[in-house]
Image (cartoon, rainbow, N blue to C red):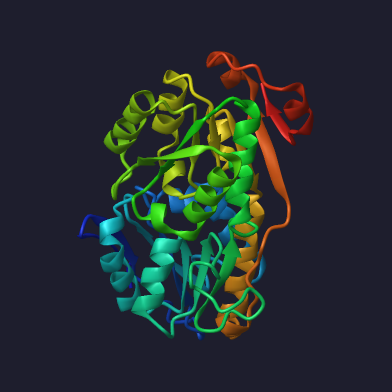
Amino acid sequence: MRRREFIALIGGATVIWRAPLAHAQQSAKPKRIAMVAPHRRSVDELRTHPLYRAFLDELSRLGFTEGTNLVVDRYVGNGETRTYGDLARAVVGTSPDAIYAVAVPIAQELKAASKTIPIVAIVSDPVANGLVSSLARPGGNLTGATTDGGVALHAKRLELLIEVRPHASRVGYLCSSQHWSMPAAAAVKEAAQRTGIALTDLSLGETMNEAAYATAFAQVETTGVDAVLVSDEPYQLANSKVLVGLAADAKIPAMYPFRDLAAAGGLMAYSADFLEVNRAAGRQMGEILRGTSAAEIPVYQPTKFQLIINTKTAQKIGLNLPPVMLARADEVIE
């Protein structure tokens, strides 16, 4: 059978379905997994980006290699949060052996769409977001890896941002409208109240595209925001160029949740090692493909977080970084 690839649009979400390879001589049917990264715009990213390669390389190390005994269906959603329900149902409708997913909203939709297909999700606090019963014993059909050490991490990012702008009285929280009501945002709101900082919702709405970022940053000047805290939604990575460019043009300090955003020109980031997070997800997927129930696989939680500072960006926006902050940084990008 010749290899076939189909592309379809479901409510604005790009869906890629790849038919399994059939070899008459192959006695065992290949395992088939779905990779769902709804914040991405191109399925090629799910083949080549280092984070997804780390996941697939770990699976290969465990004996599951794409093109031999593993078929990978890749799905992207263009950051259109309104279409996630349709996307999740489309994925579940193909009946994969297991699903790898990124971000809380799509994990919630996938879990609602299937109670039986195992899901390995990379998400912020899965307990607080109602995805698992506990980190040690997830229960149900979902396990995975966290992107934080609990919601307190979001408050830590705010505290670090205030250190570089100590006289700030108002901080803008750049996030989607859905994220504003989630546990991570609640932790940021509580931390802002505790430190006497006014928090402004710099809403990106339901579609995180260039126009949404431009609209959000237009509020920076009109609301008197002194600094910007960027949510840990993965869509921020997909919009890294426009995001860091707007922050630089506004000459405003911003704290980012991912190292890649600091490397792209963002001022600073406080982040887990996401290569290791994806390797952990690969190990969990390997266990599932060998027959272990997702309910019995503990959620991986990173314990080490790195502070990354981009001094070139600090100079560009006219910010004098405290020497103590530079001394504490795990990485300084010059």
